Image (cartoon, rainbow, N blue to C red; front, side, top):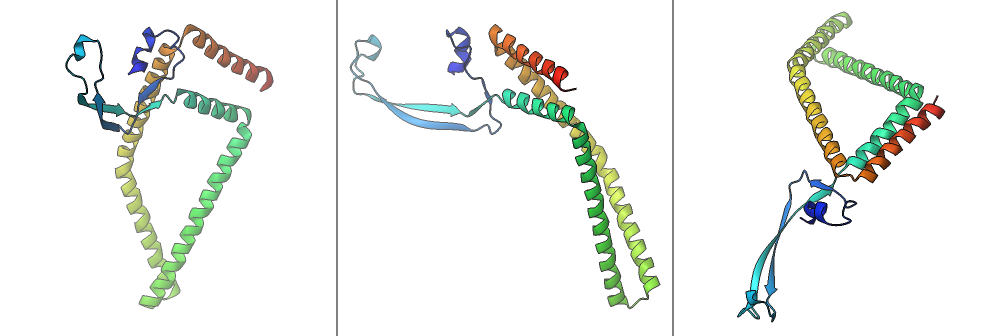
Length: 203
């Protein structure tokens, strides 16, 4: 509540900004207030009275704008200063993923060969043909299911990214509006200094 009045409170421009918590949790407490002797006309005849007071407290969290700026800065520095290392790691990860699926395919194929030969007493050639058609059927069914799911997944990811972009844009705009002129100058100076250091020493 006090944070909502910080614009009219002297020297409150450096207070932390809080936003609504995603959990939407609200804490409610019941307290009793005892009225003491007072010269105020509002409490005439109310001495020693105990009044129940309901106190509600909604959970809030500090704006994650600093965390987002820090993470974005670190990722930008990493991807721009060592791109060869990043691409090398991505290629290595893709190679390991390909090896994993190839090994998994070989294990499944070998297991099917043994099961079919054991239960149906087929010859090697017949077993290979049966396993081939089984694998083709599984691949085609998986592809069919993917074709059914991918459009919905694409729209879900697109809507999620748009909502995330709008939320971050609104958060940054609100954060910029709450900054004092000195803090705005300081933030711009830090960004300009970082870009300048990168241009001068990064290449």
